[in-house]
Image 1 (cartoon, rainbow, N blue to C red):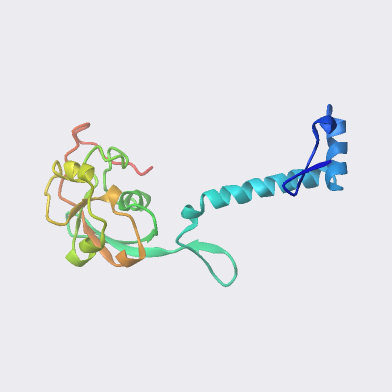
Image 2 (cartoon, rainbow, N blue to C red):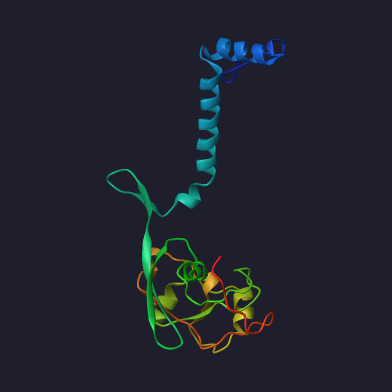
Length: 189
């Protein structure tokens, strides 16, 4: 057994040559059976995976019982007939995804890749509009193609839920311009 920066490693000469010798090597190295070593490797792999994806864990809270739930904001979608649909949207989710998960007819023909304007929404309160990140040039290019463009128009795929947007109200335009398929009815993913 050798050490590498404080870690125990098998030396080249002690590398196992069969499954049985592998088990013996693990037992000799750790003083525990192979199952324990496999569990440790899996735990370290999962721990590293969680660390790499810690940004995905941002916005999660832990309640008193220790179970995790994602923080949500309230968003109201107002359709072309004036009917309101109030939903809860997890922090970090786009309004396009939220609409699809809640059976709200917001098309999103390009599936959020900034290649269309079919997820065009109108932010109904200018104060909320000002809380959004500025639209990128690519988003502005697509908005130029949107039906019923207003000063507070945005693409739903680019409006991401964050705590300061709690209470956001979005109007859905009376129509969309889908150059790919006319008469397409969106289906949630």
